[in-house]
Amino acid sequence: MSSFIIRELTTLPDMLEQHALIQQLNPAMEATQYKELLNQMLPNGYRMVAIFNDEKCLGLSGFWINTKLYSGKYLEIDNFIVDAAYRSQELGKRLVDWMHQLAIDENCQTIMLDAYTSNNAAHRFYFREGFHIKSYHFYKTL
Image (cartoon, rainbow, N blue to C red):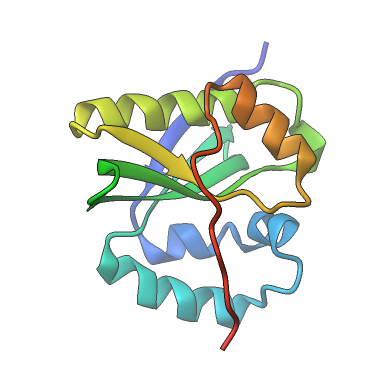
């Protein structure tokens, strides 16, 4: 049985090393754009957690902790991805469980996320993990 380690990625270089995995979710995301966006997001509280087998990152998720009027203090899952070659091994569940415990430890009232409307596999996963659809997330490109 493989042993998996979940750890928070706390440095920009650690996050940048995961660019290939990020591209599985966002194929058009170039390395320079990924770095530029992280440099904008990190000062605003963006964090990242990853699951490893030895030194190989098999899955990761960004997340934010913040507060909104309608939800209270929340943990927002962002850019959640498990390497396509390692899906169906409960790695995603382990990452969600880790973030769930962090949300409890941080006194959050809710956990939320956006999932692409076309990503039916993700919808099934999140429903299995106890999430429900609360609202529509509207989006307008400028």
